[in-house]
Length: 597
Image (cartoon, rainbow, N blue to C red; front, side):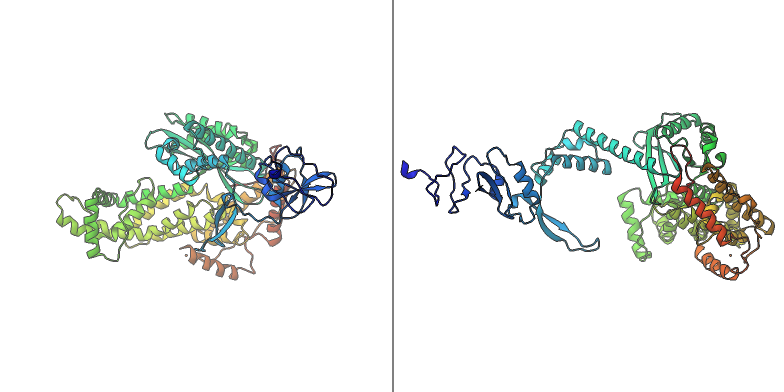
């Protein structure tokens, strides 16, 4: 039996004490090395040697030769921590690694595969699962579906799919986290907050919900938009009910003293709601005592202008085209029949028929523009299918084609207004002015229905834009590319000489009033009332790109006269005062900077 015993060897006659009561599993010829025994069960010992240094036992890293405590009372936590950061360790255990695909840039189609350490965390999987359900509006019950659980096990056997209730808690936890992030972002913003709100009806429930979105400039001068509320509003949706819901949303985020404006759609209920709210919030905290508290949605104004114009001249024709689109998209068989005939008659057209939403004029424009390219197909099918009744008449097609040519400028402008990231106030002014000039030009059309449409559109335009183009004009002046020159350039094309001077002075006076009010809240006196009056001259007299070219020529001709434009030093002074105040404004005291949507 003694022949089978494992006895440590040593160069000296003095035996080396072993702190293990188990038989050693390995030996080494190095007299200072100690064996790894059956007591050393941790996987970390595959990366370390046990070594006697003087009177103590150390653990020596196999990769970098660093010595750490290695006695029986030292434990292995510090050894594991070292392995994670060891600069010379190369991962050898493929069970602890994962192939990661990387790309040099987003356009690179070839992945570069890299073998890297991988550690699974159940919490990360639950977080990503909750995020997936939120992003794609999946039902929470999907986590209990057998197919989903089987699929998850295939991807990651270690992931334990949570229950429905646990997933719901994870989603609410994520909601609270995101809410706090938005609250922090709002607290840090030094400027005023603009709000937009609209009602939304769920198709499957027929219930009304209010969405409230905040818009502001953060401290890095980036435009931010964040949804701060999405709440159910019980019927009836009267002005009082909507006002209470919106007021509660504003107060719950402590935005009472930081509002610049609230933008809503144009309807009588919203008008009444804004009148109620205007009396709720302190006048002193609003821009010019609430003159711009109620703003009207530009995209909705465009919708009203076009809808009124279309209904006045081609309402019956539009309805016949709409009915035709409904008929030929009602079943797969009809769609196939329509496409067969279209390939023979109009092989160059490949767009599918699209039905419009009556409350969105640009969808009506898309429906009409597609349908007109297939007008011959509709004519042929009307003679072949007895069920297809009341097709559009030749006069309908003529009117719709001509009107679609004119409405293209409205379509492009609506798309610009509906963007989510890039639209800022200084971009609106040239677009709405270009629309005004275009509509005025349609009054000279040889077609009476075009002239009638233009007249109705012009009336609606004048009704709404007068109260909106003030702030847009101010934003244009603060754009160093335009200053006051673009205001004069466009107004000279829109107004006669008398109204031109009045409108230009109205915009410049509004800017001074805003700067004076802003300065007074900052404890400064602007003294802009003593500035020299401007000599409001005139400029040359008529698609936005063309106007920008004309504007460049206008600037060259007007370079020396400086008629009606802020002098460079005056402009720099105004902008400097605004920027200086923005840097030093005190949110807690309610004296925040000027920031409009």
